[in-house]
Image (cartoon, rainbow, N blue to C red; front, side, top):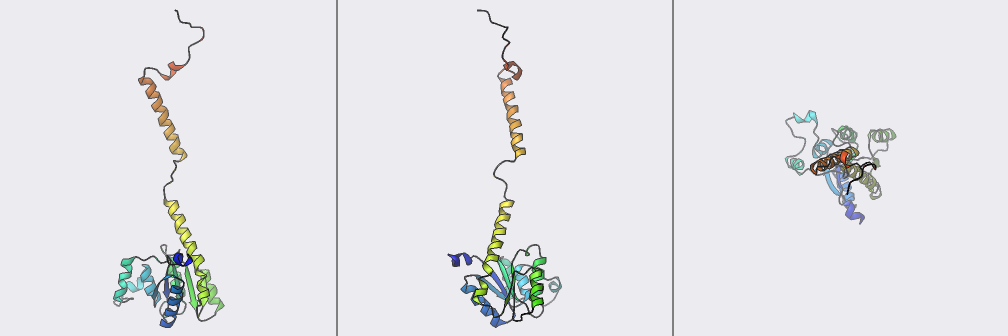
Length: 210
């Protein structure tokens, strides 16, 4: 049951080392997650649909031509797990760009590193990282991902409910409906030849002659 539920989640793994990238991909698939792997922060941003301004005008593309199909697929990413030390854009830089984006900031980000540097760990967590894993990443580490994925799904569900229109009319709408109903009643009484004032009971002092 848990495996079927986890297969709904899509994880984007980022690592410049092909060995580490294959390892994290295998561990994620063993945990029944859908996985996409890229070898740089810039490719991760392109997959997420966010482009670096300083790369847009360059003649050399930041990703291979085959990767342009990603944008057309519009695959939803539920979590990003990235290496800290990478050439060009570090995992910390990637984390900052994701959290600075209004459309991506709710995606959980997990940082991996082979170096246990407390100041580095603190900086990433303060910037918004959900977890900081030390390499080699183990299967037990990935069990910590599920709560963050479920939390994100819960937020999306609540947002959908808020965006929906209320099923019941508001008090203001109910008041308007009551006023309209009162007008309709008066109009009906007038059409029948009896005004609201004439429907009052006659005084007791008046009697009819037989």
